[in-house]
Image (cartoon, rainbow, N blue to C red; front, side, top):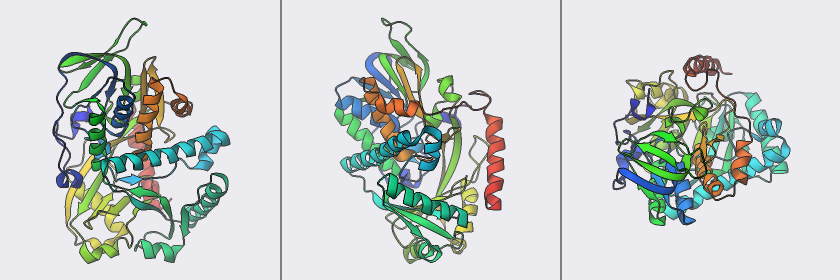
Length: 436
């Protein structure tokens, strides 16, 4: 199944609140005939647009090919949370890669946040400060307090505040959680606005952006005197370097990546403006996420609409009634909102890895790929584009730091991962329901 076209109409944004309330960019042209470029980028989300922007600003001839519209995929339909750190906490990173590398990874994540905030500012996209993490049991809260102390002591990050039950419920009025923490250095934003803003910046910098230009084959150069050929449905591009930035929509374009990166679907709803009832959801302008494997996450937009994500499925097809699927976890947290209208409901495809850390890999000598951000991609995907742009220019330290992390293939590889996903989602969904 080609997830590029399985759940969405060709060239149309999903029926999200973001797409419904923001004017889209004027269409970019389709790629037709034969063309040449220094670098071809496959995918028009945060990763690809960041790479295109940084390469164009460095003076390279760069072409970005997007199968639908800029920001069509996860970049334009996610929960909009700009989180701190990597997907794994620093204690897990230290066990995986050692203390020195863990510190480097933390610093890179802070660089990712700063880069994303800078690009948002350049694009005129507001960023609100504050992300809360909601805990379901005392063990999670105790671990969080230990991590808060460790980050302040060893990593120089003292912006996370532990909140006991009363303090957390004053911020997040729900009985579903017993405590939490608030990261004052994290934030939230409109994700589609960020993607479209990055597209404008890349276009203005001289990157050649193409939409409705599905890449279905890449023939990598085998000798120094050969060019890589990127084949689209109406033409082809000869180039020196390729950057793969399609994440969960990569399909079988490169099987080395596909073996290590698993697409999964996630779902979001938005309510009508809540007015005074917004205080029943949040008492400050922050984003929230919890500790479930199938994570729940939410925030209020500037008009007071609740944007809430949650609910799993074990099919690559979106459910017929997304709103009903997401309403269930929403009401488990806020039962008093049972009468509130859900005005928008949409799904999207992200990608995970075995260890939940992004997969940075060189599928071929002149090809770079970064994907599998595992739900933590707003900042890290943006940084990954910059890191690949630097690597193309011979400055590969950041890319190589990420590529050196373990990146095991899923059992069954790229062709037979699906049974593992079904089994895994069933198991972790059971654990969520039992409160583990």
